[in-house]
Length: 125
Image 1 (cartoon, rainbow, N blue to C red):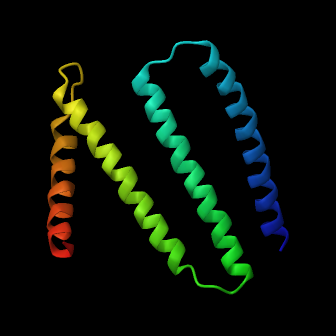
Image 2 (image 1 turned 120 degrees about the horizontal axis):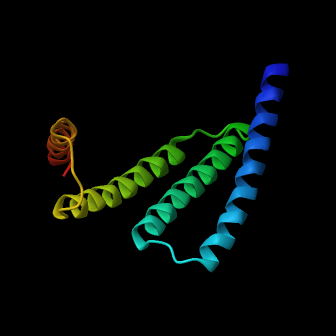
């Protein structure tokens, strides 16, 4: 019980620090020009965090009301699909560009995952 309380306090402190940092970033974003791609990546990350926070809140509520997390699990899977789609589009843009140098090993690993995922998708469609 004591350890659980300490963990909750740590989470609360980290969330409070994140809020302070985000408010400071808001001022920077409002006043300075930011690279559009960096800003887009930042917005995507914030959206993922927002959705994860919502899901965590729903999970806690479902535990308190003895409801199962099935709907929440489906939501999280859908969110992963949305995020994966956006990331794959970004990788496509990166691969089209000449300014980024990729390591062959990374590309090979990514290719393997994409091919495996493609096969699984064919089974579902």
